[in-house]
Image 1 (cartoon, rainbow, N blue to C red):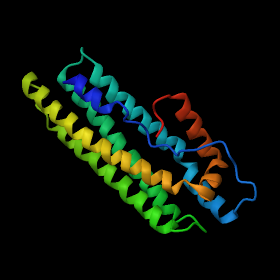
Image 2: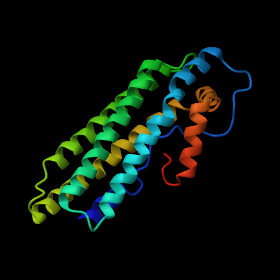
Image 3: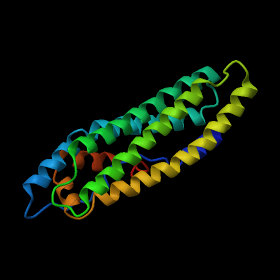
Image 4: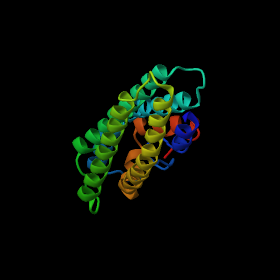
Length: 198
């Protein structure tokens, strides 16, 4: 069952700002200030989310751990993912709509809604893992199979959140974000991690 969980995680990547190397030529002070709010906390959030995905994948491939150890590893990782995406939603919500961007408020609210929903989905996975029967190998394996099936549905939610984020990070907003040190660090960390980009 662990391999199935690992398969559900393949492509389960970190939501990182989809950045390129371009910078803003003219600059927009209001938009730059908004981007700074968003970018300052991004490296820490991404580190937490990335580490959680690595932990789940590692646990899923582990053939030597006991059911209890697997349960604890998955539970902590799902908790970290729930907290990481909730923090990202709060950050973008707190930053407000990007100034001077067409439909900025609508796009921002869509991102917050989808990240909040994704956070709740991982919190639900944590609850399900916590309830697995670790004393019965058969029941544990069956329960883990159900969790991996649910993870595939969560992956669809994650893709939806990535799409919403990319919409937020386009045009002038993207230029403002790429000029911020925090977002540059996140992009570099994502590139170094290989398959952990959005």
